Length: 452
Ligand SMILES: *Cc1c(COP(=O)(O)O)cnc(C)c1O
Image 1 (spheres, rainbow, N blue to C red):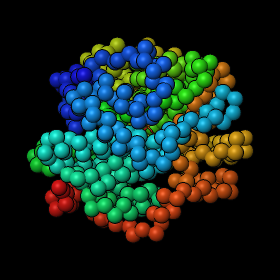
Image 2 (image 1 turned 45 degrees about the vertical axis):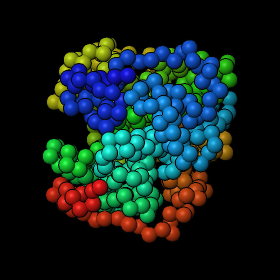
Image 3 (image 1 turned 90 degrees about the horizontal axis):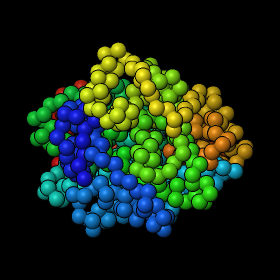
């Protein structure tokens, strides 16, 4: 299968090249040239384990990787999960389920994609007989998940920048206590935006980029979106037949990556009825789905920090379909948005989406309410999903992180402090972090010394 750019000015690429490239050279995002139709295979899919299902799904896209190799890559990616179901679907009440996506090594849903991406990168190193240096900036979860995707993988090194003192102590430990020689957790003297700006400049330096075979890790990678389709399918297949036609997935949303994956799966013939986009107080997507206007605002720090985003980087993939797969229109929309900070969709198709917005005060009271009503502890991101459940649908709320990652917020809401064995272990390990100035020169010099 070939993959095209949403902006239409990049030649189509095979799966491995599109994954290695990340952002298309024309500034667009990669999408399958045509979407497959899985509607005839759903009955057969129902019998598969998570890893088997992931393989059957990914092989349709990753046609340039031999099937047996892909099978090994997929199997390895999900043996690191602590729950045998990988993505257990738990009934909470009438017409209500939670899909627990936090049983991977860093206890957040990003492991689903980044475990797979790490193994795909390691595989490419072998095939191309090259090393690869992965570079990214994080305000928390993504960096930890990316690090655990590449931990100890031969031929790879990973450099993750984060603002010193501004990620949670547990998140820092997940990045800086791995003990792996190929992991470089870099605490920079500056903000997350400073880190992003330095990265942008480093990636803009073609010679440096080529010399170190630098690859970016960010939420727009094609492999991440496809890997995330699988748990929607797996969850849908676990439902009683009578409920399958009336499902609403409720998705705590920041960059629109997670919910986009579910929507793409619906476009591939899986009869999901609807999606609820659940935002925190950073509500650009809530405003979009209620008014048709996409307008950037200021980012406000919240109790659900992994959703503190205003420009949803994956949204461009949805725009592409929304404007009738017309790449020229995508370029116009993105240009208007870039110059004016807003775009109004004249004929916005909202039928399958609804949206909610949750303030910090509401997050705390939702954690309390879910605990009281169901005896179940949700993390602050997942809590946003419980704001307004549609009484006419079977709701599946995606649980994007373990509550144990946010002990302070949970304790102040319900007086109970959730723990997790893997986080307890981290507390006794030495923190190995590298302090750097946030300038491109300092970061470049550091990479020169440590790259593989
Ligand atoms: C990244 C993240 C989100 C937001 O996911 P998007 O794909 O950006 O919408 C929500 N919850 C948690 C815990 C996350 O780490």
